[in-house]
Each structure stands twice: as C-alpha cells, then as structure tokens.
Length: 206
Image 1: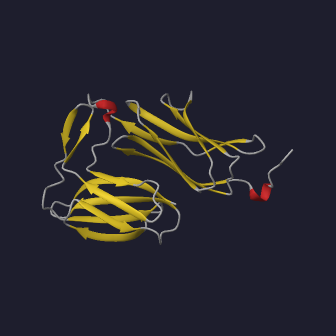
Image 2 (image 1 turned 90 degrees about the vertical axis):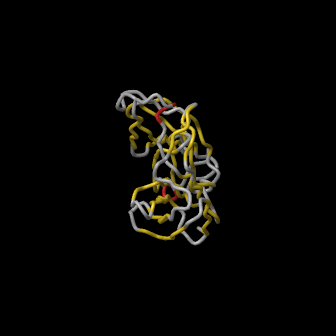
Image 3 (image 1 turned 180 degrees about the vertical axis):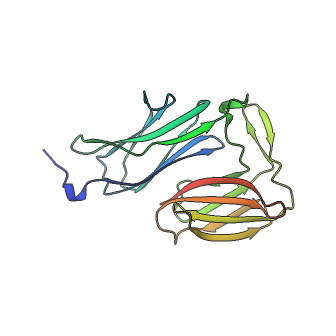
C-alpha cells in the first residue's frame, strides 16, 4: 500500500468564498497536493448543522483551484472544503459565510459592475467594467459606472497589502500578473469622480 510521507502532507494555504455575478466563487490554494488528493466543496444554509456537497474537484498538482456555486440561497451561505488525501484522511478548511438578501432578483446575486477573467489567472488578467448586468431576467443598473468616467483600480493580497494600482478611463483593462506570487488576490474598482466602489472581485493567481 502506498502511504503519503507526513512531511509532504497536503497543506491548505488559503480558502475564500466571495460573491460574483454568476454566483458564489469559492477558491483555495494548496501545497504538496498530488493527483491522489480529492477536494469537495460543501455548503450549509442552517448555520453549519448540516452540510451538502456541491461538487468535487480532483487535484491536478496546480496549487490553486476554484469552484462556482451557481445557485446560492437567500440568507447565510456557509462554505467549507473537504479534503481527502492518499491515506483516506479527511480534513476541513475554515468556514466562510456569505450573506444574500431576500430581493426578487435570482439568488440576490451581488450587484457588482466588474467582471474579472480568466479566474484562476496565470499570466494575464482581464477586467471589464459594465454599466449594468443581468440579475435573473431583469437588468440591474449600476449607478457607479458612467460612460467616459475615470476609475482607480487596485489589486491587493489576502493580507490587504496593495500590490498594484492603475487609473483607467476605458471599460476594458488588461494587466500582467505573471510576477505575482501564486495565491488569492482582491481587485477593486472605484469611480474616481464619486469615490464610490464600482465592484470588487477575488481572483486566484496560479
């Protein structure tokens, strides 16, 4: 029987869950994981009393992974990661809770005016700023985005330290992230004229 060297056991470095346009974006960063490690994303809507597996993600020795919950529920959505290693040992991540309101929009998805892709990103990250987006079947207008406006963009690590800043006047922006250390980052866009936040998204750098 093949056994895993305890010194090389998988380590979960970071686990996050954030609101995104399409649902709840769950992301995690690991080290020492191999192809025999299994990940399962779990969700609880009753304060952690019961947990439901939303989906499994097989390890590919990439170090960074993500999963999109397309159907978050109104109220408190708690997420955690179930990890099963080579020896069948099960461990869990910390729990991250996201609150969704009770509006009539589909799943009350976050009203954010930005889209970040690809996620995870390896070399290039694209940012798109929109004047509105579809939530359910109705169009939600984002008042913080104005054609011809100027925006401040900043990228920060999970500790809150700002890694990169830029001021842009176009709706689409691209930046090189190849020099960033692998992990989870937060990109935030602010309308320079009104000092109001247009949107905030989390992305994983491979």
